[in-house]
Length: 217
Image (cartoon, rainbow, N blue to C red; front, side, top):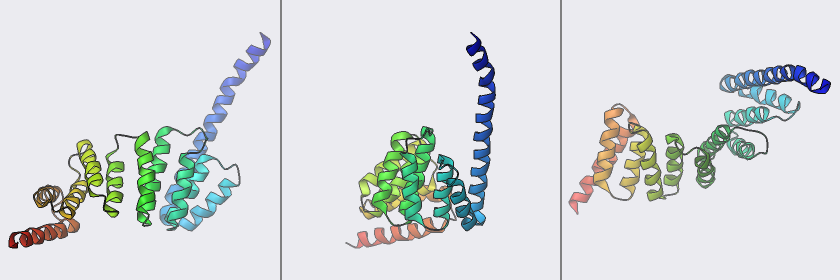
């Protein structure tokens, strides 16, 4: 009885200490994220100091995103993937975020196949995020897997119908497979959403030229 009374008295203290640690880590991570935008070298140095004090998940995340900010994309992507699959008690939504960010880093670093792998794993954890579908579609298009890209863009647009980027990506995929009517429809819908988007205006010119050439044959 005495032991249980003592433990019940210690529990709130232990919970409070744990909450204080978690709050301090979140504040430190937020500071790291902000610093990657203005002083990435300092953010990276801070991450190394943080890692030396326990190698905790948020320290590893700080390290990974600071590497991305330094344009060390391959290293950052690899560390994000390692963090996403680590045995630490990490929330599933955070694991999905790490994988999605890794996929984007692989894609930015011109590793579309690695991006497809990471983003596919992210979708296993988060199936209702249109951005992950859109990002994987971009990776598919980079390796000319047009139909798989279209499938992902269909899924993205079902979740968020007014996404001009997804529509323009799908238009490009249709253009590549010479489905010019579908390309024109998607391009025009994208332009109604973002009428001054230079990339979509260039795409309009490409589609119009493809239609013109097709009519000459």
